[in-house]
Image (tube, rainbow, N blue to C red; front, side):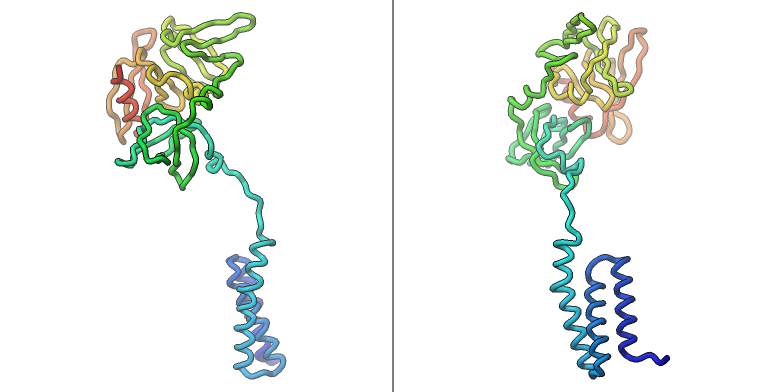
Length: 276
């Protein structure tokens, strides 16, 4: 069987349809439509100029008609709120001063650190509460959060917190632990523990993320995902690799153990530890 011109046009149509399957862009399918139109021109024994005209008309039809239709209907998807987009409206805490002039700033949101910029153009100080209003790639734009929102975050259930002490209920007993009697809080196996100066340990129902949002920043510092520290527990600290800080903690047997403060929190830690 001898190949005629329209055969070649049909073959080209098939090739471009296959390319569209592997490279979905609506470009290949538009060209395929143009080839199919040109094939009809060849079937009608039209000259090459007519076939080219049919090809151009078909391709333009694909670009102007098929592509918008497919984008609007065939490829329409429901909006999915991702973890990142879910940051909008969340409340965070400034762990590095947000300064528009130096273009510095970092906020902690649910244990994660985000580079932050001020929506108002004003400096937002360390430990201030902020609300996320926009997300651009890995940078969040924030504004100061209202006090009403902050107080609304304080739980009124077991393990509640008030202005100067933890309230922990064990059975029918209520135990009060003053902030000044606490050495640090830590998380182990997703359970929050409170260590006191007397060496006693208590389990708290809230996560470190939640506690960190309302504990007084002049007393407590979120060193990393596992620890919230008080100055009483720190024996010394020193600079480590990659801008991190190694913090040495006192223990009940007079030995020490160390934890790491990330580079992003290093500046905030120095400000906190030297604050009187």
